[in-house]
Amino acid sequence: MKLYNEILAAIESLEYKENSQLPSERYLSNKYHVSRTTVRMALNRLSQDGYIYTVHGNASFVQPQVFEQPLSGFYSFTDELKNDNILIHNDLIDYQVIQLDHMLAQKLNYPVQSAFHRLIRLRSAQNYPLMLETTYLPKGRFHQLNIELLKNKGSLYEYLKRKYDFHVDHAIETFRPIMADRKERELLQISNSIPCQLLERYSYEEDSIAEYTYSVIRGDKYIFRVNLK
Image (cartoon, rainbow, N blue to C red):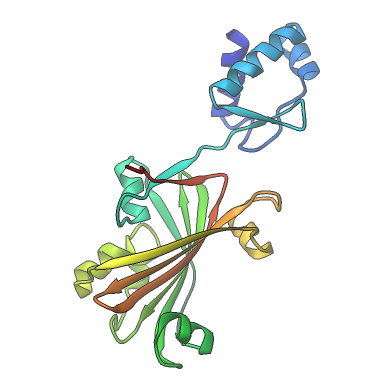
């Protein structure tokens, strides 16, 4: 248990970072002056308690902290994390007013060349990048956006609700696994071996799409949960 606590303290202090490989049993045995059997028992206990995981037989890696999103109803990432006392930070990667091409116009059921706001934000919690989020908003419905407010901790839904009386009547979400491209991996700070989830959300006011968002979400940091009754 002493060795267990020593290794756990090293994990919590980020001496051993998320998804990094722990030193070998031989190294830990020499460092802490204990037998390899003791090292193996401590690592097994850390694995059982969810602090590390083992791959390729004997190699042990630090388990990343995972954020969980219930799917019982319409939600905002910012609000849900705030409920768990976790503040989300937004980095604005890009903002433009664009005109829809044929593909987006068909996807969103708007005329070609309709004007839309496009925001690309990197969303992080506790200094961990969680998702790269691209949002499209019709300019005819939302004439101007306060980009400075949305750069940091502002909730997009709360802002739209206050300024434009935005209320979602219903939304459709789809999920599928993907491997992030090079730029997405750089922004999310992940290796090319970590899978991601692609989330697409269509939010409706009555029968019109008022928001379309697709997010590339780290598969090692964020999970979605639904209770089936």
